[in-house]
Image 1: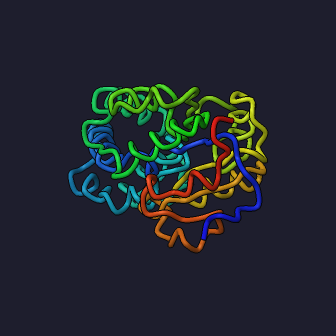
Image 2: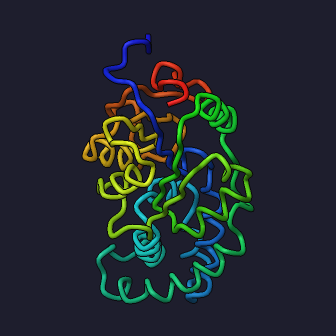
Image 3: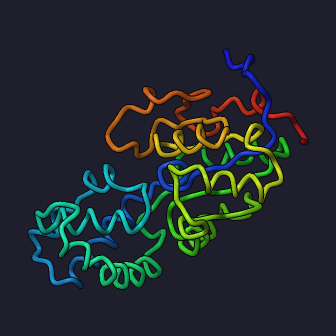
Length: 240
């Protein structure tokens, strides 16, 4: 059923959190430490649980911290006190994330096998995430995934983050492949919106973090339960 895609592709850009690695555990632990450093009460810290983070993560660290502090304090996201606290929160967050990155995270089933399938086809790969680049490099290396990728770009690599198309356009440029011949592999409407605006194809996994909305409702070339079940052979020209 996947044999008649409208075009064949030559490269892939793959998201990290929610697509290759389940990092919710990392986020929860690091955010709890960060809130404690800010002097939050245990009741406030407990509000930031896995369910909250799953709905919130995906639009960059600053957005995550702003919404986390607001949620813990029971204030609106745009509250001035929340806004003014984010730089201090980022300082604490950064230190904890470097120390804990990957310790409470797991590679999703099928990811290693799916990357091996792409490697066998000779598909050039880049990782593009809204996570800061240094954290992404550290996580990929720690999980033994880094060698699959020619490039790794985080949310601080370009002037704007996904869902803006700029990061995808810049990543295609680094790969030397046009957007029209590149597939974005992701887990959320953020990835789909960025890919569509950039002119890339989009393949979505069903197990990630899509802000509480069904990912099958988001238009894509296809939706898959595991990366090793994706129709890579139908999407890519081998050896290109």
